Image 1 (cartoon, rainbow, N blue to C red):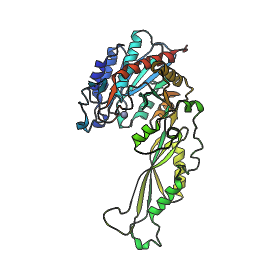
Image 2 (cartoon, rainbow, N blue to C red):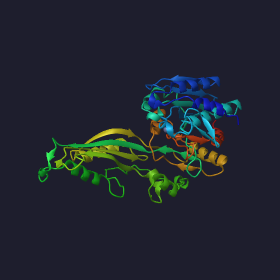
Image 3 (cartoon, rainbow, N blue to C red):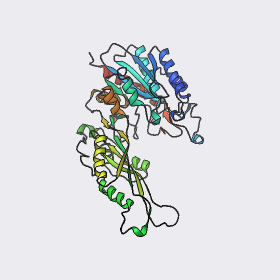
Image 4 (cartoon, protein in one colour):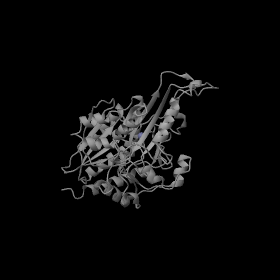
Amino acid sequence: MSLSILDLFEFLKIDTTSAKGKGEEGAKFLLDYMREKDINSELLKGKSKNPYVYGEINVGSKETLLIYNHYDVQPVEPLDKWNSDPFTPTEKEGKIFARGVADDKGTLMMRLQTIIELVKEKKLKINIKFIYEGEEEIGSPNIVDFLEKYKDTLKADYLLWEGSGKGSDGSPEIVLGVKGLLYVELRYRTTKDLHSMYAPIIENPVWKIIYFLRDLRSPNGKVNLEGFYSKVKRLSEEEIKYLKGNKSEMENALGQKIQSNFIEKLIEEPTCNIDGIQSGYTGEGSKTVIPSYVIVKIDFRLVPEQDPNEVLRSLEKKAEAEGIEVIPLGRVKPYRTSIESKIARELISSAKDVYGINPVVLPNSPGTGPMQSFASILGIRQIADGIGVDYAGSNIHSFNENIYKEDYFLASNWMKEFVAKLSVGIT
Ligand SMILES: [Zn+2]
C-alpha cells in the first residue's frame, strides 16, 4: 500500500468551512493534486461561490463510475472542546484527529489515491469521473442547477456517494437511498387578539389547529392524508436480510427506550413530525386572551416512491377545507437503488471479501439527501453509498473528529475490490 497519509494531512490543513465562505483554497489544492497525477481536471463554476472540482480518467471502457465527495467542512466551534487544533492533523493511539478527516476529506482522498494507484498498476478497467462539491455542509443549495448545467459532462452508469464507513457494531455499512422530505408551515389567523370572555362566541385558532393536527396523525403514527400510503414500497426479503441494528446502543444514543423493530421502522416508515408551534401568550403570569394566529412547522419524511408534491396537494386539500394556509418550505424526493442492482451486489460482495463479515445494508437512510436529483437529472439508476473511512465514534460535525488510521487502508482495499468487481463483464 502506498497511499500517502502525508498528502491527506496537507489537504486536512486547509480550512474549507463553507459556512464561513471558505473553500476555494481546498478546491485549488485538489485541482493541482489531480493534475500532478495526470488526471484531466478542471474547476467547474455553478452558481456556488466554491467551485466544483471535476476530474476524469478514460480507459476506453463502455461504462463509467462517477465518484461524488465534498471538500467543505462544518465549523469547528466550540474550539476549546478540541484536544488538538482541528486544522493540524494529529495522530494519537492509532487515530487521526482533524476537522473533515471523517466527513468527507478522508474518504475523498482515500478514494482518489486508490484510483491513482489502480491507474499506476494498470488495473483500472472502468472509466472514472470525480465530482467534488464545496457546499455540501451548507445544504447543497446550488446542486440541482449545477447538475442541469453539466449533465453531459457528468454522465455515468454508476454513482458512488460520499461515503459510509463502519456502523456501530463495526460492520461496513452500505446505503442504497435516502428518505424524501416535505417541509411545511401551517398558518391560521383571525383579525386580532380578543378578550377571552368572547370564547363562547369566537373560535380559538389554537383549538382549531389542535383539532386539525389531531386528525392529521393518529397516536400510532399513521398519517391521515388521502393517498399518503398508496405508493409506499415495502422492503423485500433480501433487503430485510441485510438490515441490522443494535437496540441498546440506539437507546443509549437517543437516551430513550425504543421498540424492537426500530430498524425497519426507521427505514420504511414515513412520518409526520411537528417541529414547533407558536401562538398566544406564554410569558410570565397570566393573560386572558384569544390569540389571533397560530404557526405550526411540520416535516414529513417520505419513503420510496412517495412524492412530496402529491403529499403537499393532499395536505392543502385537507387544510383549505378548514381555512388553514399551507406554505411549502422544502421538497426532496426519496430515492432507493435496488439491492439486486450490480452496484449493490458488488459493494456487498467486495465488503465481505475485505472485512470477512456481512455488511449492513440500509435500503435507504432514515435521513434525506439529493440522490433523486442525481438520478433524474443525470439519468443514473444505480446510486449507492459505502467505502468510507469513518466509524460510529468519528464525531462527525462535532469536536475531536477522527478516524482509525487502519480504516483508511481497509477502505482503500474495499475500493480496489469494488472497482475490480464492477468492471467485470463490461464489454
Ligand atoms: Zn457532513
